[in-house]
Image 1 (tube, helix red, strand yellow):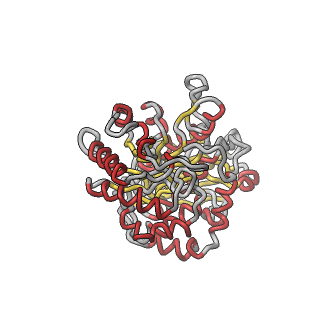
Image 2: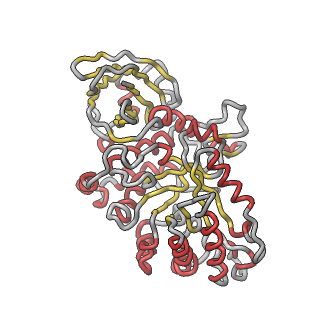
Image 3: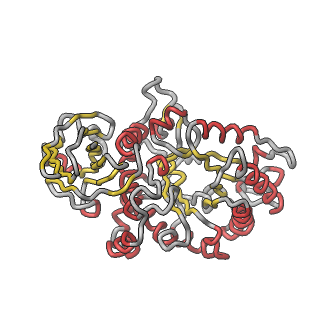
Length: 445
């Protein structure tokens, strides 16, 4: 849900560096995680479209171009049952049908309390953001919703319970949230063989408080997907290590991330997170997700979305939208896995040591090197050399800037090695306001 203010966006990047020294994110710990048994490359359907989603609807064409496979919208009790027994399903029915026609899966956000079912108002308390006066009314609503949408023709599998507990969208204690909202709803979702997504933890809630909530009545046993909002890369890893890496829960999502016009933000955060998830190993197609807030919007606020409908047709993708479109061009054509059979000159030291190159296999016939160059590296060199270990000479090598400028580059191939010189001038650095120089080297067999 939209916020008027958020933690300073710089914090999202500073957190990653600050947490790097914490025990939970130590190099030893991450190596142990990476060493656990993983699915074979591509077997868990580690696809960009499975990783990427939007809040609210976008067009079918935009979903295809951006590589977006999921959409999340509120399934608000206030609109579905505005008066007791007055059921209005037309809006949510149509939303699911539109999403499926656009090739997207739907995540319903089951949230908020109908006015007739709410506790009495008092100063500073908004009844719709509080627990219901009678839990049986909430259970009836959730039962009707989940039984309807888990069945034909909708076949929804994932159901999110509430929005941002711990913040202003739930005006009660954590224990009230667990006892009066989450546990009753989660049991209903499970009874219909659905998958429970935690309610998009408010961005102000830290891991310590979340741990206390998850351990209350062993709430984690009713939680399949740990979901947070507006966390930095390091904090996202921290939640994953606490609740998913150990097998207690089965997925780590951010169902609201973004809501910023900051140049390069999406390319940097998505690239780092996506590559790290591949290192951890996907155990299912839906183990990891980032869902951008919001998919589309109008006016100045539309610049925080992926699509700004106020702009002329054909020019509506924002900086974030354009970077996701380019990422999809490079990485969206097949199952993803990591690729490490490459070297660079100057050497790439890995992200932990200001490295700047991330290797991907895309399907069986594409290798991609994603660039997240420290600006000091980009300014020091006119070009860099990338050496790829490949079975055959590439049929095409293409360089893409973060905003989609493209160049064909000639590979020098010999003895199973392709050597490519990547120019860093000539427009490759297409965002001087960005913290990193972003782009992709794409080699197709």
